[in-house]
Amino acid sequence: MAGVYGWHFEQAPHQELDAGRLLYVGIAPRYMANRTSTQNLRKRVRYHYRGNAAGSTLRLTLGCLLGLELRRVGSGKRLTFGKVGEATLSQWMAENARVCWIEHAEPWAPESELISQLDLPLNLDQNGHNAFHGRLKELRAQARQQARVLPISA
Image 1 (cartoon, helix red, strand yellow):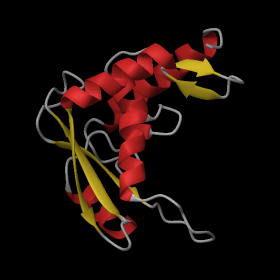
Image 2: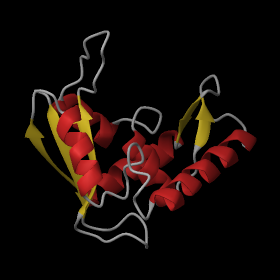
Image 3: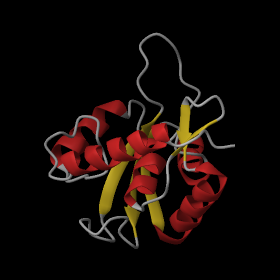
Image 4: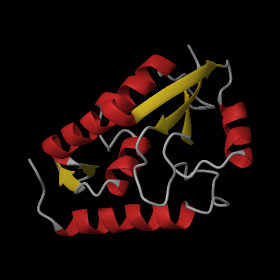
């Protein structure tokens, strides 16, 4: 099933954000002109809840906002919060994250519209107009920069 999903949080992930309101939208599958995606809403939402920061921009953002330490893992090219940090983030999400969704055959169409019309501070793509955009980019860049100087984690 293809569609758009939205995330809100019982506890805000950062002091500059409000709890209990829609903060992020995403889509599954993403638009790909030259091949077919195997993603669907169920797989994508599950990955956000149980995956890692290397495969989920939402997890990367939330972990950075919550002050978790981003680390290079494996060959050193992937960035995650490590085993403990990812588990901490998964637990925080289980307690605080709420997701809703709507089915849509071409979810990239309403995604652009939603990002342009709603205040979605955790979306970066297509969202330079958002008041939190610069702060979020800065926090994520700082986390990446710090990860690059730390040793590669197991």
